[in-house]
Length: 170
Image 1: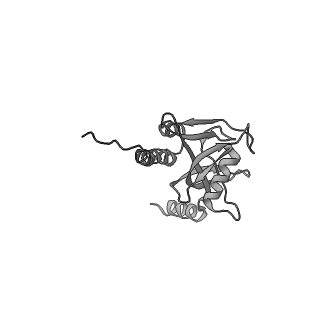
Image 2 (image 1 turned 90 degrees about the vertical axis):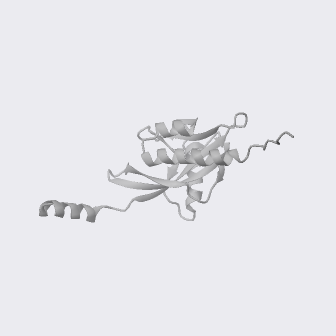
Image 3 (image 1 turned 135 degrees about the vertical axis):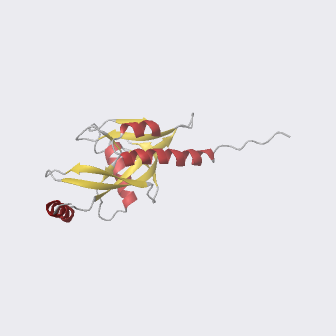
């Protein structure tokens, strides 16, 4: 490596900022009749790409409470949010001032119990309930894709435990 290239690399490292922290909700439901697992996707307001509800930290709220609040504000979804993260993903965000930053998003599972008719961002996004496989196909962030597939595995095991046990024939 030339001295100039090494200096350029060192300067880049000096100005690299740590990722900005955000919190997100992976909203899900299990259909009563079929037992099918569905997750909620919504479009971002700026680019229209498929995402999950997420936002910046809020004073006086825990990370999972922020995730639940964002789910309500962006999609009208309320439910039971887990206090432990199911994972995280990173994505590039362009701030209002034009600065490009990397965001680290901690994701919390939220079992949806109700969907409000009126909420803060109603009409600003499209929503769809889809399978975890379909969600993994639609999102752009590879780490978020992996989270959907990991969540599917976890829920498949969990839901299998809810099934009534067969009584063996004598």
